[in-house]
Length: 342
Ligand code: NAD
Ligand code: ZN
Image (tube, rainbow, N blue to C red; front, side):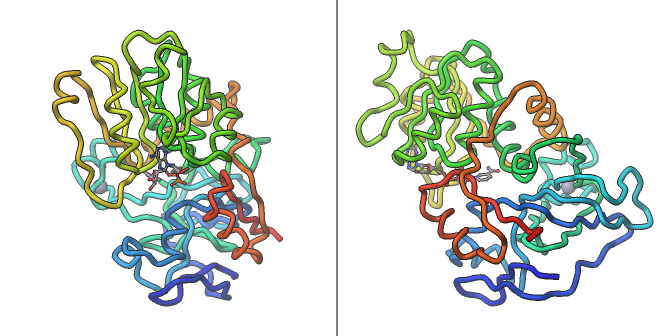
């Protein structure tokens, strides 16, 4: 099969013919239709300091995908060839305290698809049956391909109740953009987006943001009067991984505000703990998706009017992976998809 492979420790990726994945007794083999490029894939392609620590070549990368089941292991039930599925990209141990308690998203032994095991930028991908999610017939395959990052957005946006609340989203990358739509769907009053990139601010408005701002020109706290807010934001979602964004969010919260942090800074970030204490803020880290309540919520919200389609801005056949990665790196993009059926 053809696959996009990190062949050696260094920048770049190669499109190669590789053996098809081994299908264990508990595994499901999927023929990939479409796959999304994530920031993680860009890090691995570029071979930055994080990738050098996390990845051992050779490795097939990629973890956001949709496809059809082609084969199941002898122990698998509930999945049959031809069914449309996506995969949860975190493969958990199944045996630790959290896994046994059904809180698999807290597993400390998670292995990432396309990071610690061969991934989905390939014609075929194999995953344990416990990582496979059925789609309903008729789902838009572009949206099905990005259930993994949509799950990040849903997990973050639903971490705290947003009904009637004023919400700040810092960072309008693909996940922040989808979080805007989810927060609106879940009943937020205002969703203010802070994002330096004009292309993405524009996309944020299309996803339902009430107001967008460039952090170089205006602080989130400068919007209260315009939006008829009394004290500050009730809920913030940090989705940029940038220190200034997190600090501006903490500074713009109302007393008792709640801050969900998904963005991953590359270095430690100093914050004003006094602000946090005196405002009695709750700060919660968000990693991955809840298995599988987030997946259920995604499916039912999409079937009851949640629309995230504007986030997909670019589509390429897998043979044009270099152009696809360039689009993802450029910042002049939302989500970039690779078509593996061509
Ligand atoms: P991304 O990295 O493309 O988006 C980040 C956005 O933040 C960019 O559009 C950038 O212009 C913007 N930004 C930069 N400085 C800013 C500032 N000062 N204020 C506001 N915005 C600013 O992409 P993404 O894929 O949406 O990921 C968002 C973040 O989430 C990244 O940090 C990523 O590493 C992290 N992430 C976390 C998880 C998890 O499970 N916790 C999963 C995936 C990604
Ligand atoms: Zn575990």
